[in-house]
Amino acid sequence: MSYTAKDPEKRPLLALVDQASPPDVAAYERGGGFRGLRRVLAGMSPAEVVEEVQKSKLRGRGGAGFNTGLKWSFVPKETQKQRKKYIVANGDEMEPGTFKDRMLVEGNPLQLIEGMIIAAYAIQATHGVIFLRGEYHLGLERLKIAVEQAKAAGFLGTKILGADFDFELIVHPSGGRYICGEETALITALEGRRANPRTKPPFPQVSGLWGLPTVVNNIETFSNVPHILANGIDWYLGLSACDDGGTKLYGISGRARRPGVYELPLGTRMGVLLEECAGGMQDGYKLRAFLPGGASTAFLGAEHADIVMDYATPEKAGSRLGTGLAILLDDRASPIGMIRNLEHFFAQESCGFCTPCRDGLPWVEKLLIEIDEGRGTPDDIARLEDAARLIGPMGRTFCAHAPGAIAPLASGLKLFREDFERLVAQGRPSEGASPAQGHAA
Amino acid sequence: MPDVIDADLVETILDMAHHDVLPRGACIEAMKIVQDRYGWICDRHLKQIADLLGMSLADIDGVATYYNLIFRQPVGENVIMLCDSVSCWVMGTDGVREKLCRKLGVKMGQTTEDGKFTLLPIVCLGHCDHAPAMLINKEIYGPVRPEDIDGIIEAHREKTS
Ligand SMILES: Cc1cc2nc3c(=O)[nH]c(=O)nc-3n(C[C@H](O)[C@H](O)[C@H](O)COP(=O)(O)O)c2cc1C
Ligand code: SF4
Ligand code: FES
Image (cartoon, rainbow over all chains, first blue to last red; front, side, top):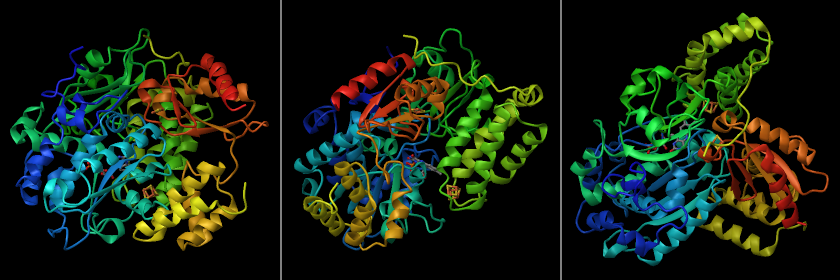
């Protein structure tokens, strides 16, 4: 099918991804790999690399969407010899409904590694860490092999490709906790402490891992970098259907015919993703609403089923692009049940550092259980609204976990108001999710 | 389980500690390799790791209990982790959980009497396009239907008998 066919010109990120057997160094190079790094080390200055990435308008793919080159430019401009610095790949991927980084590490780990080496050169980092979620056993195995291969071929270690540039890379499998995906918590985890987030400033680019300058980027973000350096800014900007650069790994899960990950121009419409890539809804199910980019993005109703999935448009509609992997709510699943499931997750994964999140989210979950099980009162709906108003705004908590947790609740209270009121009025449990029956073929 | 951690593991832990900026940076990986060999982290081993890394027992236990994948209690020969996050919920993980509990005769969080299986909930396994998803030891399954459970469990029972 045209949306999934291998095409290095249109779909560079997945072009060499092979989940059955990822390319080794030779196959990766045959497919165009390490061209970007070779160009960089053949004569570009670190500042030139930062500038090129900044102008390519690559924005972070981990959820916040910050311009990647701009982030790198905040690192103090010192050479490798002047100060130790770190490059960290965020492969925690525990946001429910997100399954894109797994594909990249399992299917083409060398692409990530090349992106990290280029980034390291750009900020003159000496050390790199790939932080991978602990449940990705296959990904871990393949990353370790790929790091060894890259080392043996002279892409890691000292005097890389004969240049005056050294870089050492290790893989760290996580102990398993959602909050480790938050970049300052991730850094704390790597230091062997309970992974509570830290207040910013200071930002990691100035004071990160072990107090040294550190850049944390998502795995998909790094995987874009080799292509920018190999093919140039104009080519990269041309991949996109909006103002920002590149393609995006989009995805669909829920009651679609063919859930999965698809690489498409950034700014592709949701209708293309759902109807053409995912084959539409399964027979007997209708789309009711969706979370456009993971569990911590606000619900959009079915009237947005053809929304442009760039950074700006979902925000205008009251949500966020987030990770770009949408979760579908169908007409046969209970929206209250779905929100209850989401808030159970967020309450459980709160790190406990600040009160509104630690105490507020379990309270929210309790109210939702009451309502979902037919014991709720109209006051409970009002209490949920209070909680959303009090916990939701950025800045009330140390990190964005709590605002993310409130996004589906606050939007759901508006969008599914009638469902909430009906459940409370009838005093019967909601119907829950439709029973397991796997995917239609 | 031996009173003290095997010498080869101690050596690996000291080596990892030596390569980190502070030894404590190696604590998660140290606990993981100990758990890989003995199944879980008992108090004696935890104390020993703490000593090797220059941490207090309270400090390292705080780290250990923070994480899903570090076990401070004995687990069965097979650890089943069933995803209870949102995409799997939509696709019917509740039915799979009921079937698993019935089949094994345990509740979530418990181990079967014969010590063969521990059943735990887990958050999104990054396998949402194959929901409902489940991890048994290092192997991922999905989409799992309630009617698949008997076959999957029996296959693992045989493998570890
Ligand atoms: C609660 C929470 C969880 C997060 N989880 C992840 C994650 O699993 N992976 C990720 O790349 N970013 C995650 N982030 C975002 C990171 O903090 C950070 O913004 C990102 O890694 C930066 O990379 P990028 O600029 O390449 O997107 C999370 C943020 C929060 C608040
Ligand atoms: S918002 Fe929640 S997860 Fe973030 S620091 Fe506060 S308690 Fe921890
Ligand atoms: S929600 Fe279950 S694997 Fe993602």
